[in-house]
Image (cartoon, rainbow over all chains, first blue to last red; front, side, top):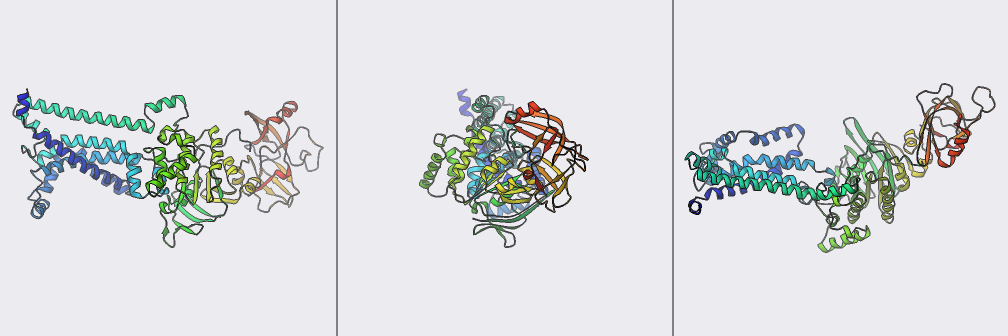
Length: 262
Length: 361
């Protein structure tokens, strides 16, 4: 067994992890940025752009791969331009892995971030403004932490998705051992070679990473829940004091006590 | 101290049109739900941009549509206490307060600890907002505002989230905390008790417009408009038809009211508070021109009674000539007078004391 593990080419694990991390970082910033931008747009344009940005999530990855290939192929304008001007090669390269994984995982980050921002009580923003906090500080200190759990779960899902990307990656970056061969691609290959031993090992590794991601996600949700008053600690308090943490009524609550003497 | 506002904004189906100049340090804005009173505060704070107009506080211009001036909320130096307090959920009590202070770390820490002790929050400084009670949350929100040292403080329905017992306590506390504050404080509320207790100058708002403006005590005592009378707690209204300098017909109650006071030309309604009725059990001598023989008394029949801990509410139907059948007259009795009613039974007339009759537009 040890012999087998030693003889194994571990490069797919590192390539996958590297790709996953890089794509997650890219998607994280792009997704949050896009979420904030789209939220502030007027209705019609917002729906349109939202559709475009979410598309990679619903399209089959091979279709996304096809479009990426169309865009970055060295026989097409953008591909020619990138290669001639900067010597950048996207097709059949690790950069291709990153771009494919980013495009496919981006909608998860974008949608989670947007949902999280939309849930924030807008009075938090206004309170911060009326307390004289600069816009940048408001975003980093108030809005982002308030959206924290949603953003964190978006990040974990994005990472998991980027790590497992297969379809678009195989079309754009190909399956070059030691260079662009990710775990998913390696699994497909070894199964074609009927090497079920290696396939089983890689499948195990993927399972482990996927499970750890979900576990992490649950931990995040639990921790933030406790702090925000929906966790177990607060349940106890609510049982003791029924009015505690009660949702505050809006203006509709007529404040005219029945005993008022006037 | 002077706040002058002339600003409006149109929404689909609602338009806000505020125009007033307030000079007192404690201004109340009283209005029903959805009357636009909170929106008015939002315009003052810079959270809601008017379509046009001008907002000036002392020598500073917050907004001037014509001159293209629109100070950001950050630059107005206005403290805003939100109805739900809007504490930052991911920060501790101390962190929340520190957000309001600009300056070096030492300055911030000093001001935060000053506020913590002033608002008796010392033991709670490391707690998160969700771990605090409603009253404590409000104290933190107020401490956060005071740490900012605002020139103008806006209180948006600050007590509506608290239960009755806590409400009273927090009202006393807020009054005490703001006692030595020398800027203007504006309280928006739909509760006449809060407004009466807190403000010395009062705006009555309805449908996005200011209906009446004056001293709080004066407006409660002698409201000029029906909205004001209703918002200050008057329960009984009748359409009025002026029949001379000293006579007016209360159409919905079916009686003629004769007064020593002169009846204003533009009278449209008569108002009468539910606590001010004088019950009458016997009929007076027959008079010419009909009527029951008792001056300014409404013949009534009992509809129903609601008993409350300290008060009994009687609802009567007016039985005067031509009285409208869908009008109820509310007559509230404090506990001391229950005995009289228990002995004598249900009165047949409710007499109006002349000085308590409200002539309204």
